[in-house]
Image 1: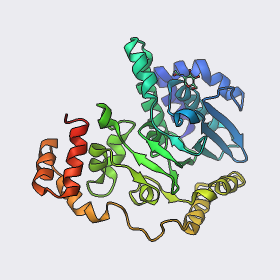
Image 2: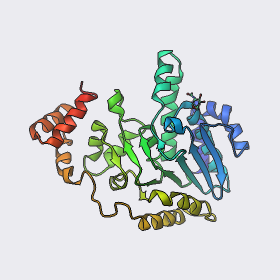
Image 3: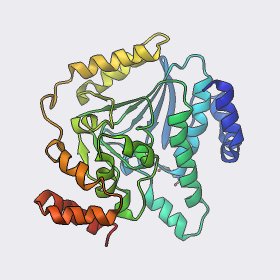
Image 4: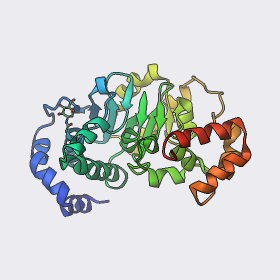
Length: 306
Ligand SMILES: *[C@@H]1O[C@H](CO)[C@@H](O)[C@H](O)[C@H]1NC(C)=O
């Protein structure tokens, strides 16, 4: 969308206008903020967003959302920004999800913050998928689950490494696969998305790419160099950025010849999970009776069916 559309979308949204009034002015007038939980930096041709709660595996909380969202409009309007990079600090996680503990404590204390968290988180996910005009590169190195998936999967480029660990584990805590899961999961191959949603199955390393969650795979020891090369681009187009990512992807060796972990089960998964109801899926798994089928049943009973 054009800037005008983006801006009118943003101002049409009451919540955004409110956040914009509180934080937007600050993020538009200063290139850095003093927040610790998320670092917003301008480097080379890019705006670099670093989720910075490594002790909490960069779990996303409302303050982080309220820094990132208005910063998008600064980056969108900044003529020196051609690219947005988002990553996690600490090397273990991109983002392990929403800060469930903070949300449930706020919920118990009956604070409005619990509702605000989800509304503003989903608006952020939607903005990444629908309104960013500049290329968005998420370096999903390490744990990338739930809320972390929402911050990455809707963007143009997602770079996994051998340390990437993906899951949509919401059903295990009595939630639905949110953060736009209802959009991206059904668009994966066959019934894979239904399987990932209902079982919370974890995908690791190159399988995150094979499943279509990541657009590129890069050996983690090359990730720093990749970032440097992206930052050094001069007024890059989307194609220039894709070329750099493609070149790193092509050079990455780890697990190059390994087949997709679910490959041998995909025909079965497509047939079990094409049912229209969870009851029918359960019946399909029971009827199959194979150890893989029963394992999935056990997982589902261990979470939302119990
Ligand atoms: C978010 O995390 C930061 C850093 O851990 C903390 O200072 C802040 O109070 C948290 N905000 C919310 C709303 O939980």
